[in-house]
Amino acid sequence: MSGYRRSTATATGTELPPAQRRSRPDRRRAELAVRYAKATTDTERAVCAFDYFRGAAHRRHPRPDAASEVINHTTALLIAAGDQLLRMQADEPLHRRGNAT
Image 1 (cartoon, rainbow, N blue to C red):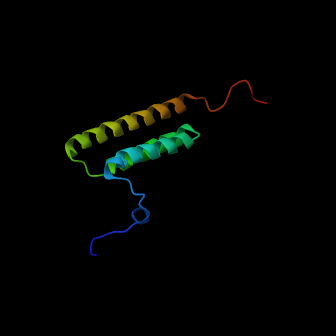
Image 2 (cartoon, rainbow, N blue to C red):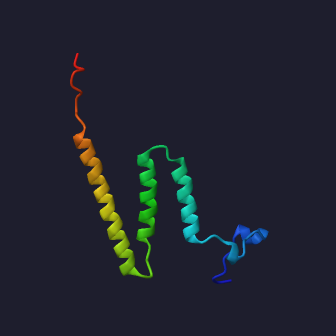
Image 3 (cartoon, one colour):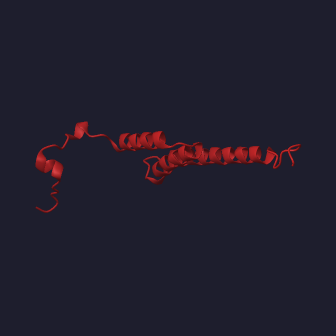
């Protein structure tokens, strides 16, 4: 039949009713939780969080103005955090004094 899709879940009778299926936000949040838990460094956790944010920001939004405001605010916070980390690195001395051999 045209437009009718078969799946192995339908053939075996294991397909969940629509009310019990997890929504896209729930699935994405669960995937983030798994990736975040596997991350071992701060940088890996930041990458996981940014990928989650980027995926959510990339999708079409029912309220584009509100979504744009959230995205702009978040990117400004990320830039400010990057500036702060770079300032902290700049304040660190390159060589320790008094330990020269």
